[in-house]
Image (cartoon, rainbow, N blue to C red):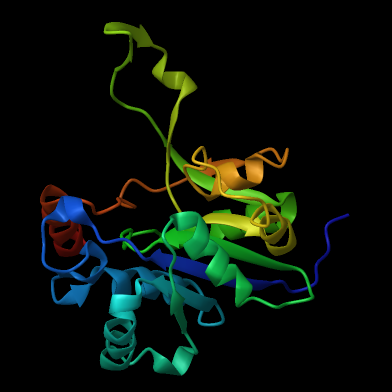
Length: 231
């Protein structure tokens, strides 16, 4: 029987990267889309879903003061958002964020890319609810393009229906994901779900939203501005 007891929701927003592909003076997550920095838009997605969401932002040491100033500028200080330092890898950044969560009661934690400013309320709700009832949830989209696999300079087609495009927030039972992050870092950890999966857990997929793009290139910025204009 699933408990009906209220579960606290957390989200760790990972913003420790330098974003070299964007070729800008500052990391991509701090660039503005229609006057609002990408990372602020990402934070607002979760506050729009629930003002009771507890938010932790993991940043590069060089941008901690900048992040704190952004929270003041956009009047987000009242929400008790915590800013901590990221590490040399995403794994270490998430681990630093998890260290700030000391709940002894059941909780769900989402881990979200700072460069994804358009995750929908529906996606957030499905991820947190599925993680509450099943232990974890990862949003995904179908692959709409044809795929070919290249091996030893030879390529062949593969069945795109056997693949999914993975998004964030990836949500987890707090105790299970904290235990998973106690292990040593492995280069095979491509995202947070692979960390949990390495402990033997089955990953549960839920439907994401197409607008939930990860902004990594100048072209993505063009798409982001179009999405804001359309909203």
